[in-house]
Image 1 (cartoon, rainbow, N blue to C red):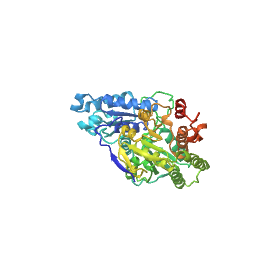
Image 2 (image 1 turned 120 degrees about the vertical axis):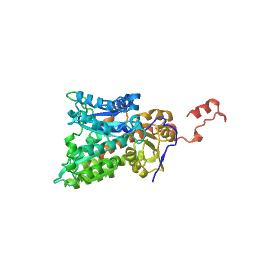
Image 3 (image 1 turned 45 degrees about the vertical axis):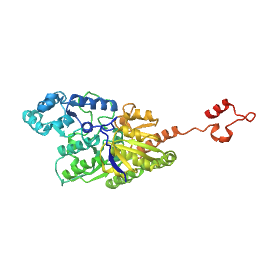
Image 4 (image 1 turned 90 degrees about the horizontal axis):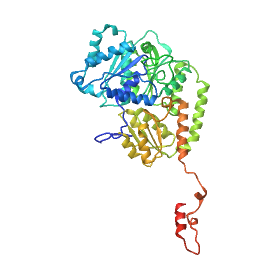
Length: 465
């Protein structure tokens, strides 16, 4: 069992952590016709906007209440009202999702009260959903903001009905954690639909940030889960939550609508996917399709081929807790050794990692603990540390802005796990020493004597060899 410790440094050096409002804003981007709105200064929103644009390489809908110094001190009612009214007139969204920031949280703005006043003053907004989440960026981290936002969406749009008259046995809710990419969501949708089930994902980034070209421009999110689909989640037969961070949302849905849930703390690896496939077969009443049996066989063969190269390798990881747990657990199953594990916030899954200590710290901590490792795994902000210590970097998580296709990376399912084995295994193979003619020579054969003496030139050549 790992011991979770927090860094005692006075400041973060090359931060690993991303803030709650950024996580909340990304969750809103998985809702159809939504406009995320950060209640704070323009700089806070610009930071998040640039981060998302560089990672997804797509147009990102994100607005701000543009709080100034004076407005922050006096209160942000006028800024919130102006932002909501302008967005409603120009973008005509179905939902406006508001996330607080450190500035407004420090002041203590009553945004829920502001929204009630705005609705009283503007009855023309009655048709539009307005959701507010408290996400101060001076506490918690990215996945916390995501988790709180999904839970609040359920509280807002799923009607309370603990005992619905009739459930749809073929309908399944899926609550993906923030560590899943749009490509991962597409893979899960394909797996679930193969059993004749109808999944509803919340949030659904695969519809909004999967890189497709829309026919018409829209100022709000391009796709995602609609309000109507969210309202029907209470009539589903089951909820599948992926990642410990989604336990809050799953229990919220169970409490409001009585939908039972099953939580998979990871879907990377052989055993977790066996559990998922077995669960889907049971609730659907259908046998496992042959394609998954074949994919499983391919994964087992890839594990057999790859374990020679993973065995004994030392790996360090810096990531959000659920992503760290998923990849770290899979690596140890492949025979690799976790040399260091750095994360951003507390989570129950961290104690289950096969390492003595998990540190809540920054990329400087990761760099210091990665010396002598075979591989470092973190997002693109770790590239300088990788170069300094000479350890190869596998880019993992958000943001990944110096490589293409970050939104389509696949880490779940049999196919996603197999892809990871090949990609990382090839990195290990590329580091292997290529044997040459001198590899097999004994040390006493490396010195050539002429007349019983060794010349300086031969000493130098021998040392170079």
